[in-house]
Length: 248
Figure 1: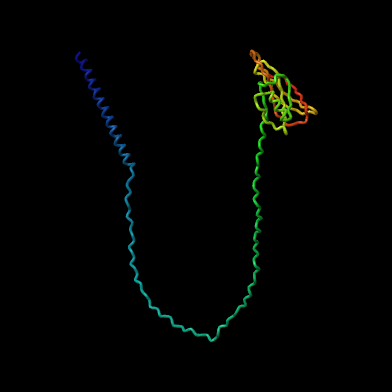
Figure 2: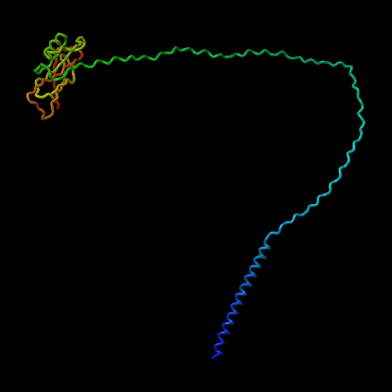
């Protein structure tokens, strides 16, 4: 039994020494790899280039400058020539007279007098047409009237509005026409002259009467619509009226 117990101890000791050897081998391998890496890096580094000395040639000695004496040139005396110089005169042609330059002077422009702008004189506006319209006349019957002079006009106006003076009308150029509608039962009734036409032998007056709205009435109210208008003087002495359809 004792021999059997000692065997495990031996096995344990042998396994522990194997581990130590393995660790030592790994460490040595790592150290060798590190040394090889450092050696490789050292070999890859560029080596510094040392300067190469350049030999300069020795300077040559300067040669001495020698001056040689040269004889002076002989003096030469100039001999005067006995011949008198001959002057050759050239005949110059007389300058040609140039024709005077003709300078064209522009003719003065004719002065056109300024024309003043036309002055437009505005024509006076025609006076507004004279017309009297309402329902307060004293003429109570239906009819029409044509006035040609001042006497007729003053007499008519005294019947039409007895309390007022007759307005001024120039009967040398104009005349007065009038239309009376007679009694009406409301104040909304009105009459209006639309047009005046001159026919051979007669004067036609077109007029229109306006009626009040439907349902409008008044108690004990009676009015007399009329319309008096000044028109240019015309030849026919008698007049006729043509009523238009009443308009509401």
